Length: 206
Image (tube, rainbow, N blue to C red; front, side, top):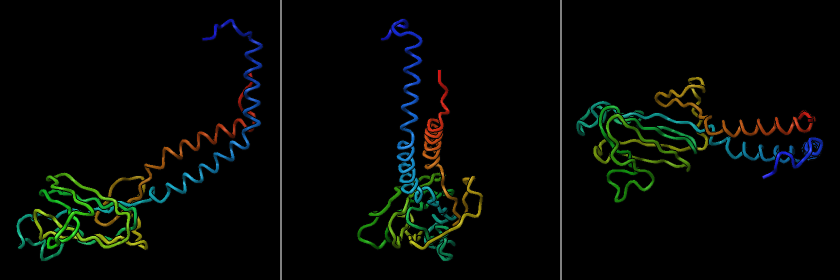
């Protein structure tokens, strides 16, 4: 640990000014490097940052048996079929009774290999992000007459019907999610300001 009298005031001033001069000289290549890194980060993160969430809910009385009204209407999972893009998330809500969301069909020898929520209690929810293109059937293992389908298509596009600053979703409407990229944008902005300030000798000398 340095004693406060080991260096004179002039020596400290010379050291500080020399460091600032060095930082200024190096600011151009450092700025270019940060620019490249920022571009790479934004390119890598942007697709997932604009991923959408599609809402599905379960119908009231869906647990009442295979003769429930929603079976004939094909909306025990409402909507029963949704189309999303790779990276999008489907969010299931269970306001009236407990259910499962299990990939496959009740008649399959093996189910739940892609996703399986397990038993979700009344009032809870379940989400799954679909990364690969394809058609995914699913059903409720407790109430196998409840069936649904998720179609993942590279050409799918569901524009938001509410401002992107809100988190509300309804039906098959989607809202872009910007939360994950916000800290990175902030960090890039701070770094850019520091580099720009050093480049223009905006850091004061002692």
